[in-house]
Image (cartoon, rainbow, N blue to C red; front, top):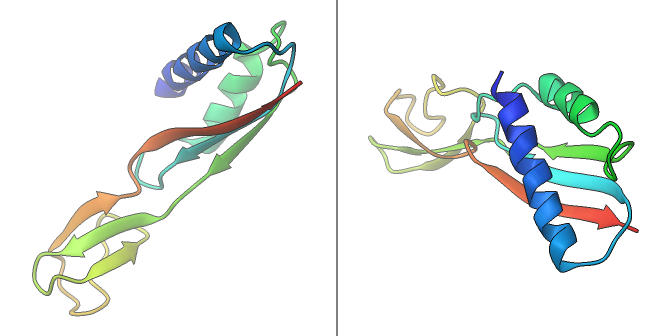
Length: 113
């Protein structure tokens, strides 16, 4: 379950922020996880809830932004939004797509007090 590894990295990031700024609680954490990232959102939320118990992050809201997949058609050059890696190009209907986005993860922001 790589969601646990993602949570560990997220918690490390929050601790690093705590070392540079003064705060006692984390109220909200917002991250971006692309549609093609192979991360299960419910599993990530569950891991976040379990791994933050007893910490300054306990009870924080985890917000997940899910940007869609992006691809370039190798046949016609169109830049397109796709729901699946197996989608056809909506412009020319070929399956020659190269994924260009929607597979990344990014820490966006957190609200602290």
